[in-house]
Image (cartoon, rainbow, N blue to C red; front, side):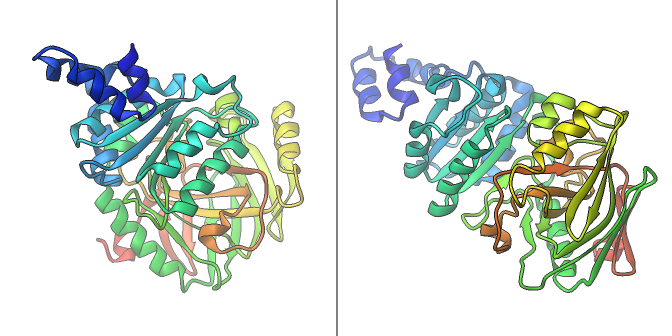
Length: 378
């Protein structure tokens, strides 16, 4: 469809010319075209509440704003709902399907994607990651951070997530995230324990920032969606972390929920020194990934999950890392946000279930549930 090619790549003058050449009823066709030509399919009603929450609450898209909506085939159902939500607020959308620009895995960010973000007020990336694609995603984020546009990073998003984590009350998530950030800016020690064997202590550098990504996205900080995190780069971490939930990057899609085959990670001086797992293929692969470069084994992130709308771990990192608790990530520290002065080519999150968490001597999470009164939110 000629109109589809024009709309999809942002050539609005071309589609305007086409529309004006149609019959007196062209407005009816125009409405139809805007949904279909995105090449993401037809929106599904059950996904629309989450999509509207993303577009109207989290990104606060305004009429006439230019939005770059980037997606892959696997995420097309989600992308279709987001496209419909953008249409509802009268945004101007440039829709891009990653598979149109070459084979997967995507080793470099397509130039057309980067060009679209250079012109956009708002960006959305909805895709499922494949091995070797982190560098391409980081290139996309670099454009976002340089231009300071509002941006939702929905890597690993599924229809299930749209019906769960994306339906939460993000204003409440924001209030909880604010309280945690305030407490952690003056905290000395964070202690985390679980019945599965996690037991570690973390200390912090007051020169490094605690970053809130609560779902209310601003030009200063882009955010994953679904959202609900408060994170920093810790100065030191020592102890044991049992990853009995989800691991990040492509490990999530390849190995899924690790409850039955947990990884026991030993950390000394903020570095990963040992991996133990009954699945020796996972043990070897995770160890090698965390030794890709000189900082791949370094704890680059310590984060609270603050999405109070979540009731269970589902085995998908994008949502599970927002589950109430504390998790770690090895590799790149997101220094542009935390102000850490080192980098890595890799970044892999590790999650555990049912945390008990103490800020100094005050227990603020018990078995994965926030003690709201301890944070002034009772």
